[in-house]
Structure formats: C-alpha cells, structure tokens
Image (cartoon, rainbow, N blue to C red; front, side):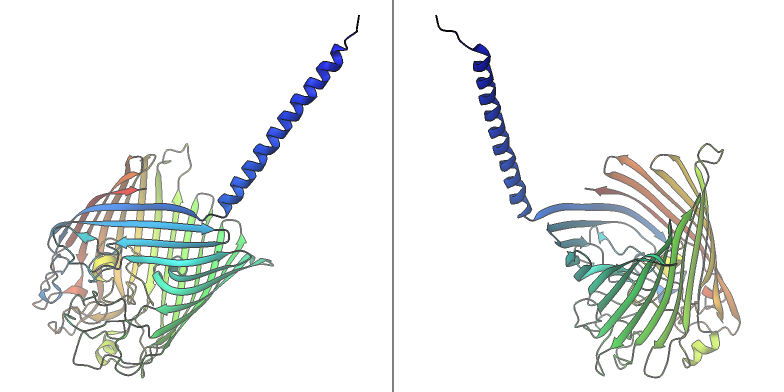
Length: 494
C-alpha cells in the first residue's frame, strides 16, 4: 500500500488556483490601466446649451415722442434664442465654442439680454453667431486667448460681454490682510465700429454692421481678486484704452451724433477706469457694491471726469420664522452727469458716465427705464449716466424653485436737465424748448416670476410699468403716458 498525502495535494491545488487568480487580476489591472492611459490620450468633449422662447407685449416705449418711435414700441411679438456650447479638454489644455443665435442686436431698444430671433421676420436681426471661441491652459496659472466673456467687478457697469482678449490669471497666494489673492492681466482688442453708415439713424442706430471691423482700440486690464475674510471678496481693477485709429476711421465708441455728414472719428478716445467691487454674505444678509471713477480723454479736446456707484443689500428671513419664505432688498445707484448748461454748450469735461463694452447685459435696475429707455445707443453707453435711483425689492418663494420678485424704483437725474430733453443728450430731438429744469425722471414698478415646469424646462414672467416725469415732458407741454412691458416665456436647458 502507498500512502497519499491528501493535504499536500490540496495545498498545491489551492496555490495553483491562487496563482491563476493573481495572474487574471494583474492582466485585468493592466488592461484597465491601459484603457485609462488611452482615454487620457483622447480629448474629452462636452455639449450643453439652452433654448429660450418668449412672448413680448410692449406699449408706449417711445413715451408719445414720434422722434423716438421704433417699430416694436407698441407691438406684441414672439422671439427665440438658441445657444450651443462645445467644450474640449486634453490634459491642461481646453477649448470652448459657444454658438449663440439671437444674442447680438441691431437696435438699442431690445432689452438688456439682446434681441432674440424674431418669429415671422426671417433674418431681420443680424446676430453674431459665435459668442465665445477660445483656448485655455490651466496649470500653476491660467492663460486664455480668443473671444471670451469678460466681466469686471459685479458686472454690467464697465465691461461685460464677449471680447477678443488674451488673459492671464496668476494665483499669488495668501497675503497678510488681503487673504487669498490672485492677479488678472489682460489685453483687449475692443470690438471695432461701424463698417458703413447706411440706415444709421435715430433712435436706434443700425448695429447690423457693428462687428467685424478692424480693431482700432486697445485695452489693458489689471485686477486683483482678494478674499480677506470668509464669504467676502474685494476686487480692485484698472482698465486703460488706447486709440490707434487714424483720422476718418469709424469707431463704435466715438460716432455718437448719428450724422453721416460729419467726420467719422473725433479722435483720442482714451478713457481710464479705476474701480472697486465688493460682494459677500454675513448670516442672513448678502451685499454687493461697485464704485468706479472714469478719467482719461473722451475726444481730442474733452476729458472724462465721471463716476458711478451701485450698492445692493438683501436680507433672507430665517427658516422656521413666520416670514421664512420672504426676502427684502434695497438697491441704490448714482452716476455722474453734465448739467443742463454743460450739455447745451458741449464743452468742458464729459461727466456723463460711460462704460467700455457692455454688450446688452448692462446691470438692470428695472425692466423698462434701465433696459429699454436708457440702456444706451451704443455698447459703451451706461444706464447710470446722470441717473440717481433707489429701489425697494421684496422676494417671495412659496415653493422650491418658484420665485417671485416685486420692486419699486424712484428715478432722478444726478444733475438738473431741461424739461423734455431726457437725462443725457436730447430726447426731444430739438422739439422741446422749455427753459425750466428738472430732476424728475419718473418711477417704475416691476414684477418677475420664475418657476419650474419639468426637469430642465423652466418658465418665467417679467413685467414693468414706468411713469415718466418732467424729464420726458412732451414738446406741447403735456405729460407722456406711462409705458409697460409684459414678457412670458420658457427656457429649456440641456
């Protein structure tokens, strides 16, 4: 008889199986590592976008002034907007393309968001299809070059919108008093001007030929992002523009008289903005603030001496309190302006505050005056020019995602102006001959509502009612009728 060591046999079988398992595991891990390596060698793509559809109803946005009449001041129409964003990423490199149909406008009376593609009027709006197109390197610092959306401070005061630029962001680190600090430096090729003067008339000023002209303005930006405390941010910034245009060249920011017979370029448009922006939260309170001082030259014989300030504070009631679904806010703003005498003479420093390039996303403080009546004939024009306002805001959120906001604004001119002439320029287009001055722009009440319909589909409603003051007094001495705007729509985000 031969004795068999069964224990030894079992051990050898177990070792064999264990070896097979380990071999299989190593092969699996190697395969997975190879797949990860291969994936890392591929560029990653991401697609997103949104579609917006609106029903608009407007009444008397010309304030009974035929010289300011526009086709859609008393009309109801439907418009739409489509945006597609494509992101590509490979290691530290990335690139973004944003196609935006219906964003840029040919007319200033289009609201702060810009004209959407209007139904029933094929290609009446010439929009810039490419809103963003840039490449970016992200490492110890960030470099971004191409057409990109830039914003200074809390936005909508000096610079906001797509701009061809090269931008560097460098994290400096934690500094005494300043906290976490980063530096931003950028060169801006400020969007050019009008290629021609066809249909270049009041009140709109045709913007269909704005983009695409060779750049003649160079901007240089330096800003710092400081976080000295938790939930508190400070941004000081400096923006200087140099005018490289030749005599006779058209320019977006200079040709402001709508007169084709005059020399297209005044020359020496070299403004300098120094600004400070803050925002933060403290318990149930939140706040934002912008303060900007504008100097430099406006033309060859006039300098800027202007300022703008915007402050807003909000309070959200605590959960569990009787008013937990409510919030309260207060906003105030002031922009410098020229007096009635200075506006008539057209000499001395320019005190009407201007921005550089505000696309149509200017900071709104209402749905009519700051958006449609004083939003500016040009991308540089500010709705704070010679305007002082105070606005009370009440918010209500009865259910998650359903938000309503009611606001009341009182509007005055910073400097007295002649009745009927408007806050800046001449709203009457030479028709008003009053010698009395006034500060009364009027008052406005607005109501906005947003609500979810289903996942990725939201609805919204916006309305405004503006009662004009003596600033818009009619040439015959009558008071203009109120203006109203109603907008209802949906937005699909994907």
